[in-house]
Length: 380
Image (cartoon, rainbow, N blue to C red):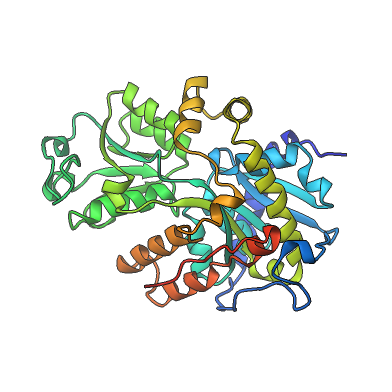
């Protein structure tokens, strides 16, 4: 019988408390193990080998936003069960506590965003698939009374971006750490030669709490990653000072992390998970179906969004399919690798960890799941 996903939400706080305790007590993994390929007896074509579920529970982290919709859709429609998988979904507010869950071995796999870079850089997880463009709806908003709005086009080649070195000093950014919000904010301020802690403040808060706090005057800058939060800022009179390309110079796709030990010991489970998830992503190409499911998902989880917001998100942020990942110009993990290089340049991670991120980009499960020649991004 299919499990009720709704029951998981009541457990979220307790799970997060347990994960925090477990993560604090663990030493963490830092080995740079080689990419896990399919077992020796498997072939390159998914049609030449039978993949069999282990029967063990696969604990999967999800979030109450767009990046987890195909994962949850597949769960609610029984696609994992059809392949013999016993999947348990656990809800998280953002990627940082998901990383803690992976490190504490309470999660086996996670639907995650930019925070994935940290779990890859540590040698804990591999990057095995991508779900959607996490940066197409990103925008940085600022209070309308900030002096920085009096300066525009200060950075060469970015005529529409607001700010200057002196006017941005002392501002307070509110948002979750180890996420796309922090990456975008750090990238934006660094263009003006400014660093967090020294020139401006980045205060760690959950997305929803940060949005409410900045609207009540507790902060100056908010990075909106979804249409609903962007609308919230604009309705309050906040000004968009930069989009993702202006702030960071690149785009980023959300995707899937799996612990290296799980990939080694339960490779078939991972391949089957991808088959079920991308089946859901394919069905969600239908705008009407996606809009209906996404709106209900957001409403059930307290995420502010109108039907119009959901429809706009669907229009500008399509889900990737397995076939998309096989395109000639697609390289799995290109965004995570670029973000890793940026983090190394500003000292967020060590320089030698960029090579570990490259090693963590692993297209083998996608190749075995669908028989496509999926390519992985590489340095240089």
